[in-house]
Image (cartoon, rainbow, N blue to C red):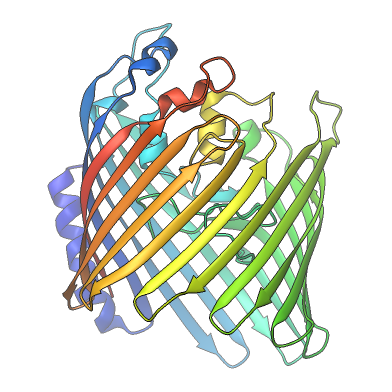
Length: 399
């Protein structure tokens, strides 16, 4: 599909979507220049500098009638780079596009393959119906069936208690959520307590030829007071038993939150080991112009996972991390964001900077840079060799 044709199609979406009524969405174009890490040659990533182009967007629709609602989202993405070209055996594909387009998996629990994904020569085309559900609501409960977003948990960089929607706090891709196929029952126990039961399925592990991998999941939210909230999760998901929770304490201008999640060995006798996740977060609006967010976490490395899968599951290949993010409003139309991430165990250090300009008419431009300043040891942290240095620009509009 021609890149110029896609650009014209996406740029025309805002005007006709507004005319139709219950439609909204966004369109974004990006261009970046990337420098490879010299150490990546040891992993057959033998390229030096390349350009990468990305065009993506969402089209949301919502229709309400009495107690019923139908909601959908179509996500489209076109990416172009020489790094997509096939390589002769035994050389593996280039993995840098996995970071450039994170998250790569746009449906986290997928039973119905409502996806067009084509890769040819130097580009990739994706068209995904990543949300389509029917909802019925009453005063005491809510029922949803179809492909839905599952949103809970405070983490923006790491959110372990929610395995159904990968955080995008570090990526250059925004306005992206992952769909999940199944059923959700929500019970409003009282004004302080809400219970969510999820029954989900996934066939993507066996390329849709095998049995459905089931998810039986409960999420509870208890509002202890106006400033204290407790969340808990439990269930079986992706052949592991999981148990965890979050505590959130709000202050006048700040919020503190803690999460933890335990994952058992695989329940199907496949070789594995238990996993632990933990996260501590702090968020504060320091002044009217200055916002600070700190997240520190631990995600136990899964020694049975390969490099490609580790980059698909996480934006950065780290086990421990501390992230310190600042956003400052230089001018009502100009915002500067700076984030530093450090793996306290390996020494891996990563800088991110964004300068965003409000152009009016729900449109903004951005200049961004990603710099891995230090890497861990080659033997213990091979995936850290694959993190590139990038500078780029983006233009986005909302409607």
